[in-house]
Length: 374
Image (cartoon, rainbow, N blue to C red):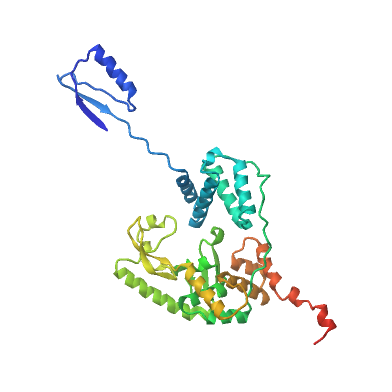
C-alpha cells in the first residue's frame, strides 16, 4: 500500500533523527522520496503486506491427506482420531506430546473402550500420519502398547436357495443393486459409484474404477440381469434429459477432470448408474448436481428382506460378495480367477472361502453317524 503525505523539502537534523526513531519502531518498511523541484514534495511510504495467519493443525492434516489423494473417508477418520487424541490428553498440542502419550491413548482404546483391532490400527495410522507428515517427528517403536487382538472370523455365506429367497423379497433399484452384489461380486460402494461408461453390454463386463486400494478391475455382467439393467439405464437417461432441461444434470468428477474438461460433468457417460432422487447445490461451483444413491438405502432394503425371509444368519450386503466367491469355488473355478474378480491383492485373502466349502468339516462324516446309522 502506498501513502502520500506532504512534507517540507528540507528537514532539520532534529526532525530527521525523530523520523529515524519512528521508522525503527514501525513494523513496515517506508521509503521517502522528495522531489527537488517542488516546495511541497510528497513523501511516499510503502507498507509491507500483512502476513497470512498460519493454518490450523487440523487444516494442515486435511490438506496433506488431500494432497496424497486419500479418500474422503480416510480424511474424516484421521481428523476424528486426532481430535480424540487431543481431547484425551486435556487439549494439549500434539507437538508437546510424544510416544508415551500415543501409547497411553492407544492402550486406553484397547483396554478401556475395548475397540476392535482394526479400529485401533486406524487410530495408530492417523497418529503416525500426524507426527510423520505434519509435525515432522518420527515416533520410536511403541514397545509398551497394548494391542487389541485380531480375531479370525469366517465369512457368513448364504446358500443358493437363501440368496434367491432374499432377492425375491427386494424390489426396484435395491433389487437390481443386490443382484450385482451377488452376480458380479461387487462391494457396496463399488456398486453405488458405478457410472454409465463403466458398464459394457457388448463385452458383458463391468469395470470397477478406483476400488479398494485405488485399483481398477473387471468383472462380469450377469446375463440374467442384462435386460433389466438396460431398461434401468434408459430410465436414468430420461431422468438426465429432464435434469438438463432444468439447468441441472451435473455430477461430481474425479480428481481434477472438472478443470480439464469443464463440461464433462453434464455428459451422459459420466452420470451415475444409480443416481440419487434429489439435487444438491455444490457450494464451490453453484452447480445443481445429483449424487449417487446413498448406500444406506440398499442396506435397509437388504436388512428388511433378510428379516422377511426368516433366515437365521447375520446377512448384510457384503454377504452377497462372500456368497459370490464361495459359489464360484463350489462350481470348480480356479481360485486365481476368483481372486482377480474380487480384486484381492493376495491370494491368501481369497483362500478363506475354501474354509466354508463342503470340502471342510461339512464333508467329514461324524463318528456318531457311523455308530448310529439312520
